[in-house]
Length: 403
Image 1 (tube, helix red, strand yellow):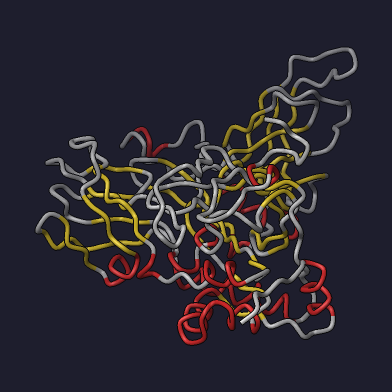
Image 2 (tube, rainbow, N blue to C red):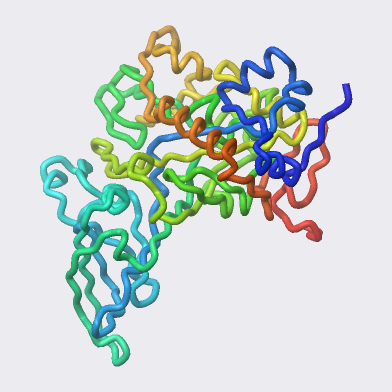
């Protein structure tokens, strides 16, 4: 059977005409198993993905508008959460993991922050009023030295969700070999491998359905926080050069995304402030990516199942540095994994239910024609695929680069 070749333009025209065939990544598993990659590529145009989990490297750029007289804010607090004011005048960046400067719970139990930047972002998106305080050293052109006011998201002149590292491509399964309970960004871990925590949506996870980032880069349009957003760059700690399985899926943490979108268009259901006991605050982010099925190779990758995706079990107490073993996501989702002769209960930090909801929403947006695919203008750095010749732009370099 001849190979399948489609372009973004062809798929987008089908979307405009209401003729595109769109399925979720969960549905694609059965289609590829039943029909094979070539027939699946002929049938399906777009596969939608989703993930919803704490993503600590998140935050928002905010402009709160000029005061009278003007102020050049150097120290800023939103509901007592410090924001970075080292930009210009009334521009600030609010980080999701920044806690309130005087959280009373932290005085009782260090690291037990109740409220932080992620909660402020959620409150703003939920339409709640937020207290904004700012201090300044004063200049001739910005004489105001202090401001204290209440704002809502509608009051803000500019609010942009800009997350430096989201949608981690696979992640460790965390356990604790020590004799005491430890508190981590992977949640509370009981002693002597009392539980195993993980935080990836498996077969629905965006970067696991395009493991070599063939369709991901600057300009890729995505579901972000309940609205349309974009991939703008590889995320911090992006590291594609890791061991991979025969299906191309990394066996350890690999790619990441830097993403942005208009905070004013987002919904509180998909941006949720969270507190992780003993670690601090974060923001659970809803993110979904449409994967265009350009050819049978993309159909094969998008047909990945939980059985095909493995991750490493790591000790977060630093008792041992080497991985304790590998498990797949079908095993993790079963509720128990077996590690070194022990049956260990598993706990997800990500929500598969909400990831499935995101993939379904994105599917409907595309089917109704309100969401077109964004063709990448600059690809994420990647590694060669088996049997392929990598173009310079696929490696994250300009096409005319000699590097």
